[in-house]
Image 1 (spheres, rainbow, N blue to C red):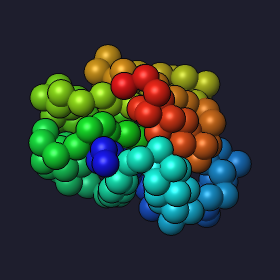
Image 2 (tube, rainbow, N blue to C red; image 1 turned 180 degrees about the vertical axis):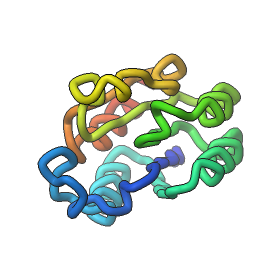
Image 3 (cartoon, rainbow, N blue to C red; image 1 turned 30 degrees about the vertical axis):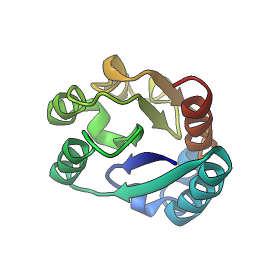
Length: 143
């Protein structure tokens, strides 16, 4: 069974109550359940982790160099600021899918830059929680 790591960045632990008009009403627990259910259908073992701390995300990315077959990452605000996350992702040899529930390119100008996008095999943005399921489908059929 292929193992997929899903990393979710800062403030997204508040999904469901944080600006639902932008991010939707699904909670982080809802997203994890959706991903595990879809992953099981696709033959994936899913591990989902969330942190508000950049260093946690960097460490988890470094640890993912072995033992995983793909990564889905929504680094949230760190997408636009973290060279450290970019540098850690450079060492991965598995497909990286960048996911955003909103579409950063349709929001404030400071959100238009992604330090992850140049390393991603695919970017999925603006589809709400469904974006994570779309990323799993892409990994199942394209990776």
